[in-house]
Length: 299
Image (cartoon, rainbow, N blue to C red; front, side, top):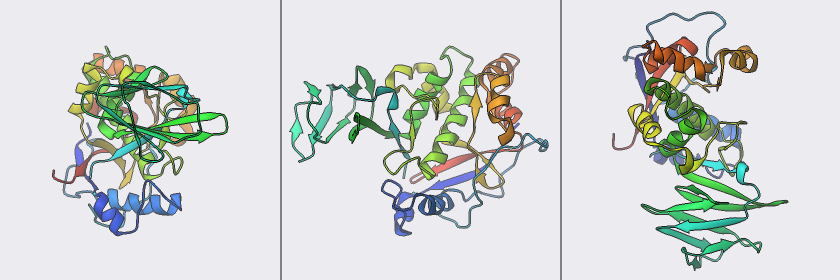
């Protein structure tokens, strides 16, 4: 079983004081390393895992932290490649949309993208933004690419995780399997917040990263699994684990076996059926890793 090993301090104010600009980085690698140092200060007095490492099944981790730092709630920027090129946006409920000149657009009408103008929409409480018909929370920014518009969805990490769980696993699966998926998805996402795929987004919404479908894949059970594991991620030897996973043991071994560790999603469901808890499932696949919690400002 994995014990809750410590805290990962997320303090954006401290990060900016150190010159870190995670959303507009001129040097992704250098600034990503600095942000990583700000995140990964763990409480060494907290309990560690209850099992020993197994050779050849150890998770991959980021570099060691060097400092003690603390920042506000993480947000993630997702490139909606599954909706490229964007043909339409539709504001539903409380949504504010602005053009490149800061002029507000009537949020109740369909925004037809027939010009090379920049658009940005943010959903308020109870509102959503439909991209090519599929609803998303948070904000949508449009970036012009050679072949058309690319939508970037920016939203809170926990909201994102709840959607990923439902996109990556059937939402009717057992709660402990869904919780294990939530921790794996959150840890994977946080690695890409630290080291984004692009200066414009952290990761995409397809199987190249992890599948994300916005409101369409966020259900009561996936939200509950996310809330039950809120802010929990995996760390290994002081580093954050990029927790890889695949649908079956065979695919997991073929795709990620050479990297050290990977979770089988159907295996997680089977273990859940045998009475394993989510931390025991995670320990089975990421042996030697520890659970850690992101400590937010105000916690």
